[in-house]
Image 1 (cartoon, rainbow, N blue to C red):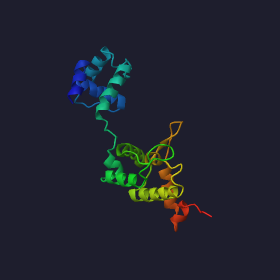
Image 2: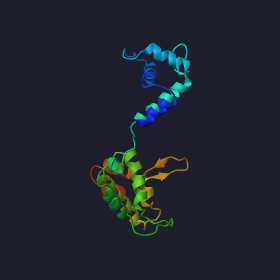
Image 3: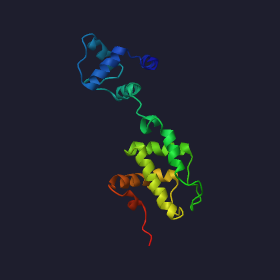
Image 4: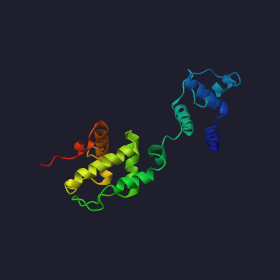
Length: 195
């Protein structure tokens, strides 16, 4: 609140002047408690208002700056996005991957903090629960275990991989979809038939 009053003092505006500017911007009636003619004349003289009572550029910028103090932060915490025990689930997820280097030269398991960031994106983008995620991941790992993990993605890239055009893709989301769509025998969807 002090910052707002300091800005008003710096610009030589009264709270009533700010109120009048706000009313003009929002096109609402000015309260009888404020001497609008006195405030309007001062605002015109100081170039906050034009002669036709429109906001000047500097008044629009100033009001937007003041309004920014009242906007709520929309950033959600990891617990908000992924649930209270998200760190336990991330560890369970990561442990489903083999504890070895893949053919790409990268380790199959990624560090937990990096995974947390990827899962924040995943939970913000998709609507799956942890049980579905873990089951889909088990199916993915089982599928690549048969192939000796050849061309398998790391635990991070399975959740989210950035393409060259800066878009993201998620194999995990695809496997979650396949798991949800399978009604009877999910094993057949994820295993290749070997003849």
